[in-house]
Amino acid sequence: MRHEIDHRPSFALLTVHLDADERVRAEAGAMVSYTGGVDVETAASGGILGSLKRSVLGGESFFQNTFVAREAGHVTLAPALPGDVVRHDLEDETLLVQSGSYLASGDGVDLDTKFGGGRTFFGGEGFFLLEMTGTGPAFLSSYGAIQEVDLADGERYTVDTGHVVAFEGSASFDVRRVGGLRSTLFSGEGLVCEFTGPGRVWLQSRSPDAFLAWLIPKLPQPAPSAGGQ
Image (cartoon, rainbow, N blue to C red; front, side, top):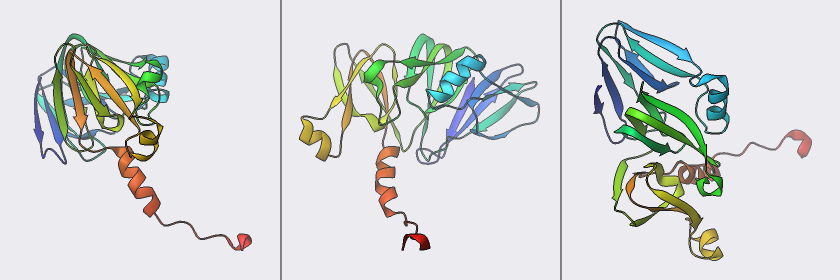
């Protein structure tokens, strides 16, 4: 499956080139355009229960679109937030993706949600991650630019939870506080995720939670109602 990524890293646009009978599955709302000869199939991927679990617990869309090429063509896709897109080819392996960072995948990649206990408390996103397994291309999106970090066996690396995009299933991880209670409350960092290799970790240079924490206090507040005066 050939692809191109233009306008990166701030406003990435993914173009997936499809041969006849080839297909790509994408998150609902990600489609920008497609050529003639490409059909769109919308379905609850993984069945009703699987889609419900992925939507309610994993923060993803209930329905997904599959683009099927009756003849050679292409599909363009873009994430909801301004940022980058990266491709990673799975080879009978597992990839864990933070909610909102899944953009598209090949037909040989299965999607599910994974419960990891308290370790997956990523910046208020909950206790679930999107689990991608199988063989085929996976396209991930970010808020801001993407940076890849390859960890050697036993190597440790600490990331603010709001900046995690995805990581390979071979890497172990744990979520902890930054220092003591004072650091957790007043350092501006809160929780961090400590990864231990081997495995690859994808980071995003911006955090949606940090942006909302900056934005919300600046929004105008509604005027008090007449009855409250």
